[in-house]
Amino acid sequence: MPKLFARPINTKPDIWNKDLLNAEPTAAQREYWEQQYQVKKQERAKWEEDFITTEKRTEIEALAKSYKDEDFTECYLDALYAAHKARQKFTYGVVAATTPFWHSTLFTWLTDSEDGILHDLERDYTFTVPLALPDEGAVNIKFHTKRFGDSPSQLNVRLADKAELVGHLGDVFFRGSIEQTFAGDMTTYLVFVTGKNQQIADTIAAVLFKFLDGHHPKEFAGYLAPSLKCMTCSRPLLDEISKAVGLGATCAKKLGVPHSFAAAETTLQARAQHAQWLQSLTHQGNK
Ligand SMILES: [Zn+2]
Image (cartoon, rainbow, N blue to C red; front, side, top):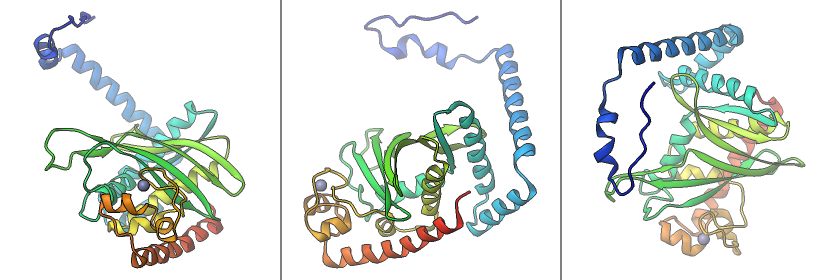
């Protein structure tokens, strides 16, 4: 049994816990970790055997091929496994699996280029992304950005691990969250929605998955639902250009996002194209 340490008041943490942090694990600890790891690995293998049919695997591998990503299959399976485990605990709602890919794409759209909306982040933001769903449904996802490190020259911002969501699909109003989780070897994200409507969770997951097809921050706007509120300051949007772009003129200028007739037109075109895909999603049904 390791000793418990109480942190002395007014003592810098690095003085008292350095040895503890740097301590080499004992042989017994290593053995225990290894055992735990093997148990988890077996559980994961058993799940794969029970739930992943040959057809499903072929389907996933075809997707991996189309996205030309070596890690895709493993990431995808990990996401499904995480959802499987989460379903056993989350009994008052539904869970859908996503992969980590949408998160990195959104992050790129928002911050990782001169066109990214949050490119010039000077502080932490709360940022509501209103995503379009089929049949004029929408889901507002509230992200938090967190800065870390001190260097302003480095990209040291990330989206927080949990985002709240609220929205409507058809005549169903829902709320929930998107949360980072870890079940297999890789980090993944799950969509949690209260209530018993699996279709809603699956639809949100499918929309997030579709992010993979977007490569440029400009494409981000196409995924948005028309909004009456500014994405960054939540003030009402009164003119048509602002409603199309999703940002008021002042905020757009502050963020360096085009706020013009042309920008509004491009956004609406991208949105119309995305709406077609959303419609196909309704007709296929979701998996
Ligand atoms: Zn604003």
